[in-house]
Length: 171
Image 1 (cartoon, rainbow, N blue to C red):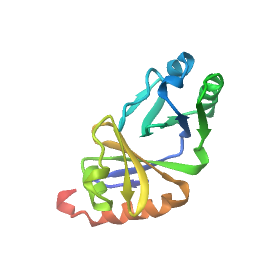
Image 2 (tube, rainbow, N blue to C red; image 1 turned 45 degrees about the vertical axis):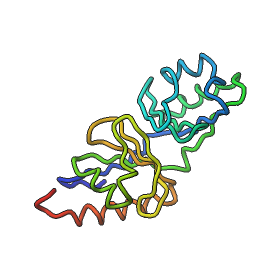
Image 3 (cartoon, one colour; image 1 turned 60 degrees about the vertical axis):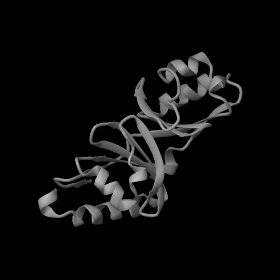
Image 4 (cartoon, rainbow, N blue to C red; image 1 turned 180 degrees about the vertical axis):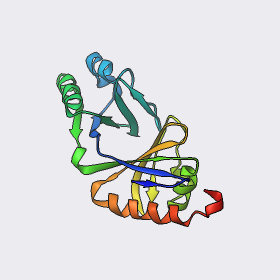
């Protein structure tokens, strides 16, 4: 965990991650939608509902972050009767990094580009430190980055070096 006046960086090991894949959102049954707290996020959207974080990842995929494996299992069970939809467990493949602070957008621009900086309620895919990352914003100056586990330490090192480069009078 990195703490500076400009940005706080927290690796969140609490998340269980699943990819909800579907050929058509209409393929999701009522039980599944109830567990998700309603409809899937729109294109480019992210939201929190029913204790889950949902992030649009493409027209046929929504990434789901749950604080328990049981929540993902319950969702997978509900999907069991859905045609043309499934939940793929991906908890071991990704890490979630939470960034907080007023300089978070500046950090993301320095690591990649302004195209990666999501507005509140949005999810954006892009490249940070030459890695494919999904960035999502659910509140003010707080963002989550979802990166492949194998590359998380590389991204964290770049974040650390970039935050260290912020001028002291600007932090």
